[in-house]
Length: 397
Image 1 (cartoon, rainbow, N blue to C red):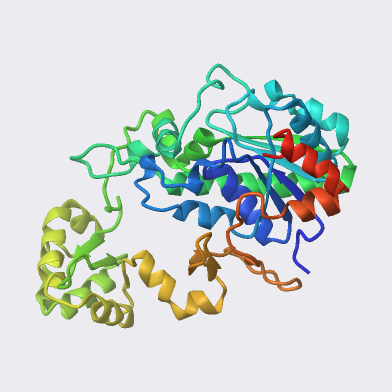
Image 2: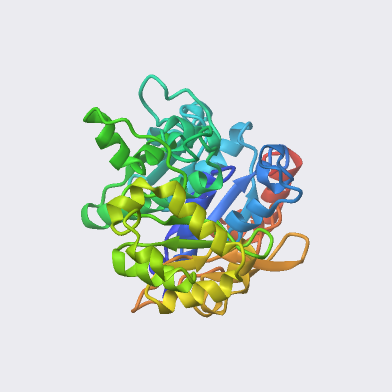
């Protein structure tokens, strides 16, 4: 049995951050019911110009393993039906702008009235309270506003835009908070409203920089450099766009690297003999390593460096991960069937539990409204005539 078997989620989330939260929970065994409408389906069901997607790849990732029902939240009966679904659930998750659920009549107090111990999870740009709570936002805003983007990039370049890494970091934090709220409910019998602010997640990942800044220390972008290690970075190799990651931590590793590069004398060169000297001469060290790396095959060089006790690896593309036998053996990447019937690899849950079934994706991407017989018929007990009326009146729509 999976850790969250028996938990049901009414999933009102859209886009990526909120859906990634419920996607993680569904892989842990929760029954996750995605609520959409034909009038306003999740925007990621189609190509999304903001992310340059030619197809709905993001949706296939974060919606796989979920059930799907149509529900018109602009209709009073749709709101009533949503409340019935929440009453039959343990968690209600949403990722609208702060206040939207309350204006629909589905705020925390309204849901608590129909399910006393409901755990409501709200994922938003800046949280449900505070002077900035009215702001909406996509992933690039989260990283920029949270300060993480300013730390990312090269010293002579602009801050780097953070995209899906932000959405998924927010979603993972929200999933952790949801599990904590469910644990509290099991101990006390009380539900709660979990408020996750995406920009605060970004700031939490920049904690060392915030500490330094509060002490008056200016923190600058360093690219792939490290303040205490050199060489430390990514180096182009012989193959086009194949990069080698190298991190030298001490003098012995530098000596080993010098020998591998065919320049053993560098280990005795006073300019590079100590870590402090190498950091001071970082540009020259990087030039030396770059001149060597561009002549070698990335995979062979990485193996040689590892044998010599140096931290090194090829900077993998997504295609490398999808083909990796280790990741496949652990279920870290799993096959998922898309809405068009094609099969491709998707990311699984990044943890294992010794005394329960392995987390994973049991079904592919749901078609819009695909599971209404189960949800409306079996869970809520609506008869076919009643459902036909609700469809006719565009409540189920």
